[in-house]
Image 1 (cartoon, rainbow, N blue to C red):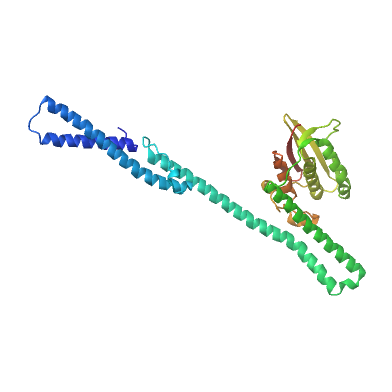
Image 2: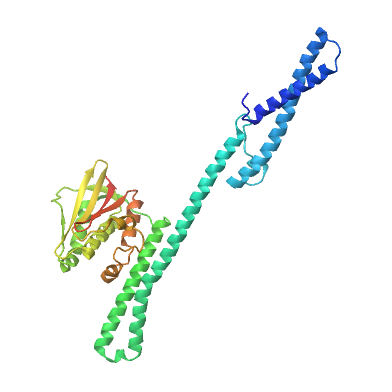
Length: 346
């Protein structure tokens, strides 16, 4: 008999007690008869049955009480009779409890790790936000103090300082607006208006809108080929246009003078893959996994000089994922970068 469960242990102990009781009876009995042998058999079975019931009930009461307390701890159950754990005493209870505790411990380790990551992310986020707001705030403060101390008497200086202060206020406003957009996505408070729309037309509108900005950097915007037919997908047209615009603006901001940005579409059966590719300096591979984090910058000084908030790609990721689609980036230093995302066909 394999003693790996309370029931098997109770059977074994009951058998020992029954044998011991019969042995004691035989020890003090002088003579035997057929009737006495049947009585001994009956007494053996009776003592075995009673012994098993008593031992097994004690095991059930003791083990159930201890295990229920344990499970209340690891599963946060209320201490009441309505939350008792059903225990099969016919199986290896302690092995099962050991497995459950290991699973619980692994879950808790995972939760602790996640909480640590969230805490680190929170600290980084607050630090980055403070840094992003500090730069324009200090600039505004400097311009106002200069004007207050006499710079306002010179019309040219006054005009330049006011314009620069206004630019920094505008930058702070964009940061706050972008943060508000991200918070709405993360709290599921921003409802998308997903409908059947032509992704080619949306991309074409973005190119027309950003043509002047691209010309200032001597960067050409185009499609990889002529798209005469409409390409319908399910999307929130305003938000996806925002995604394409952010990606194209990034390619213009960080592209090389005389370079190009190309938009491509690929048919992937049930989805359309949209790509925005440039031939700029490229991004080192170590930066790619963190590109879509809030305030993460590959080149911080250049990014701030270009006037970005550091939140554009984070917003792009939230919009695409709100469409239940994915976005990724690939890049080769010295060759260029490509950002791609998918949309469901209409």
